[in-house]
Image 1 (spheres, rainbow, N blue to C red):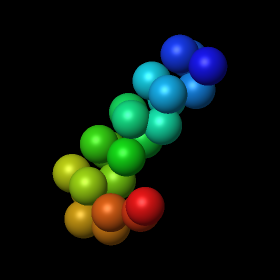
Image 2: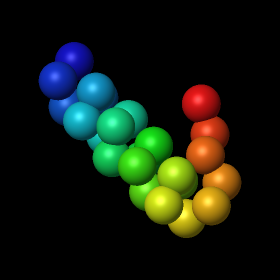
Image 3: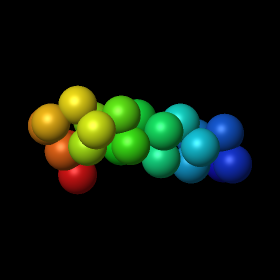
Length: 23
């Protein structure tokens, strides 16, 4: 589950930085 959480957090960070924050 840790891997999934890490990926989710990473993807979320990239999305926010990009300009399209996705919950």
